Length: 329
Ligand SMILES: [Zn+2]
Image (cartoon, rainbow, N blue to C red):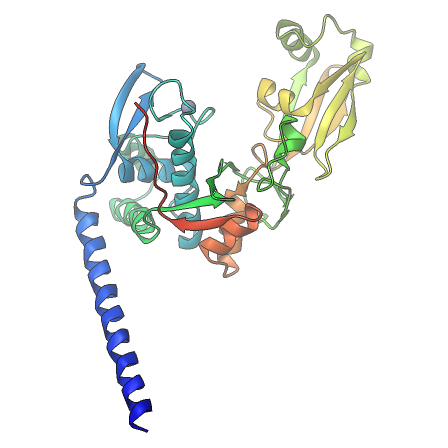
């Protein structure tokens, strides 16, 4: 009896210690919120003026997440995007992937990054009140602190945390789209997305002259007749149901190349061709690999937490608290 009472009191003491620790952590977090300039800085390559700027890490994450997704998104979706953005950055640093700085501000090469000043302007132009803007920023900052140091790893190594806007029904396998090596954590997975997303359906209309001249200019074809263009068709699909290649005349062209060449929103398209235009009827937005931002928000609405969302989009990964690395100069 005394023995059990003894054990119980030890448990109570241990719980009390944990409780204090928790309170300490919260205080620590609040301090950082006031002064988030205190933590680490990164080297951001500004592609506009060709200069490298030292930027506070958390400030960088705030700007990236605010540039990448609406702050009105669900809190768990924002947390997921924070962990993805941090992982994406650390992967660049650890593997020394950039020519200049740790990361650049160009969304086509790295992650979208708009400085806060500019973001404020954009939000105001969109009609958000000062209060809404303040609350939006606080929400993202809280997500940064609530997931402090967390990054995604696979097999002990930091992952290439690719993400995109929207891929209704299924995401894409990295290997299928880029013909790269197999990347076990970037597989095609089922995806549920809110159907009201504004870029869910889109259309790209290319007049024959634009289609032909661009393909000639970029070295994809030597020439194309009107008849050949009229017979343009999809020749291959990937396993996830996206277009892999199209056939025009004697040429096979990768859908992913067409997407980037002509600004088509995704490779999930059907074709309709008439005597003047090649029309791409498109579903979704982006390359379709990794986390879907619209999907993450939808899953958050359905009650999924940020770690469940991350585990859903990146197969077989772990989320770890901190990742030590030595930066080589
Ligand atoms: Zn870059």
